[in-house]
Amino acid sequence: MRDDAVQRHDAATWSPLDSDDWYAARDATTALRDALLRAGLEKDIPYLRADMNAFGHGFVELGRVSPATAERLAELLRLALASGLQRLEESGDSTAEHDAGKD
Image 1 (spheres, rainbow, N blue to C red):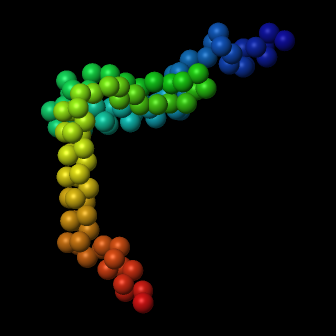
Image 2: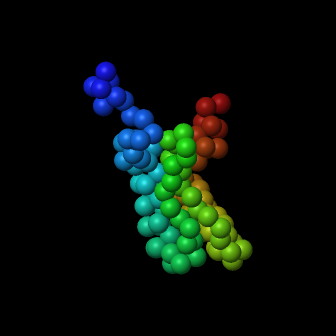
């Protein structure tokens, strides 16, 4: 009977290090942190961290940011999306061109 308890994880022995969700949240947080560093925003998002909820689901917590930081993030996302669309158009792989060829 004691061996059964050793095989199971209960609240007393469970660790986030045993969870794939924890590592996924940590890896995503690291990727986001690196991108924010390159954008010069490391001091503007002080609450960034990997976390898990009571159900063992991993999350990336961004926390609160100033309006100026939110505007900067929005601008970076807009530029990234525009750049990606421009690359698609330049390579001739745009969805509109691809769909038009099906008719």
